[in-house]
Image (cartoon, one colour):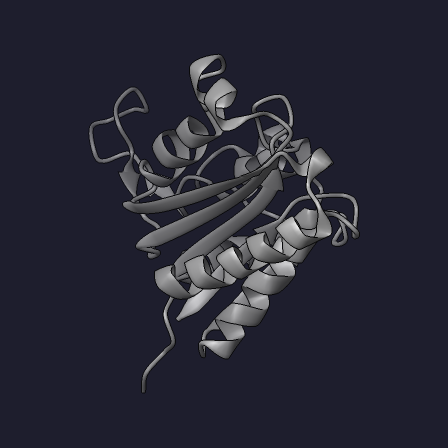
Length: 200
């Protein structure tokens, strides 16, 4: 399978980078082809110009590459921290520019944009890994777990990706090295569960 992996964290020593590394390693071990992008290392430009908004707009070569990869991907994995209940701005900008009309969704004939879009993504399954310094119960009961809503309901479901999995690791700031090692083994198990070894 072709799997797209998107990482959004500016610190190369972060646990997010460790998660992404384990994810890519596991996918390759399982025989999958991987499109991997570290958005900060790539210096991805998150600013959506007005000229790119129309579905048939011409886009820069870099954005076109991202669009082709996400359209061809049979699975998608996103790795990012929980910042104020939302993804980092660079990842939000990636969504703005890449999860675009004509690539990830379309409005059917007669719908001028007021209805529910028809999903176009080929991927059947998406997996999101998050890190947080907020306790799970507080995240759900006080804040309503906004990242679950953003990725599951507002993005992937509307783009046709119906199998959704997400794992939040917390609390990062007080986690020990041993705990992070256990978490990385959990990442390996979950990636293998969702995208098992490719059998010819």
